[in-house]
Image 1 (tube, rainbow, N blue to C red):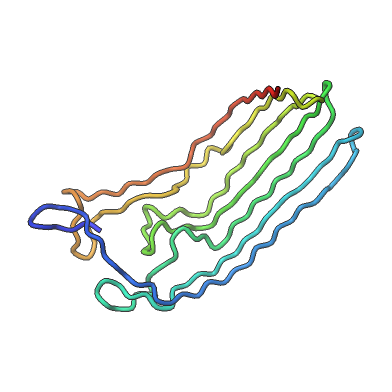
Image 2: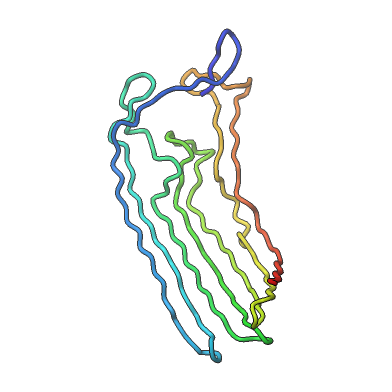
Length: 195
């Protein structure tokens, strides 16, 4: 946290004790071959998915003042729900194979710290990625077109909060709050030669 030492603003480490917590959850994964040889020999259509649920709560959390603050603390970087699904398929084409895939992933509300900070906490969001890759029959050459975060979603991955709270220093006259974001939309081409 920010603190003042000898009249100079600085950083001070505060030791707290998350003495007791209750974490329950479940994860389900699926892998299915939906179709085979539907568009010629070797063609296929697959689905791979995962669903996760985590219920994480502090039962006892002793703060720097010695008081149990478990009722106002959250688990950081622990979304309650996570979901991802990939639909992929392949067909023979132009003396090789063409593989297509599309992935949708979702994370529910994620807190960056054990104390909720609305300016840094990331509400639930979804990301969409997709790719098309052609591979030669001898597997020596491939050419791909890939897209990540195709909907150009703005989402926070981490951050720092040194704004004034509970009489602590702000590490600057105005205080500092910094958020780091995930990559914006990316579209790129790849080429591979194996020898």
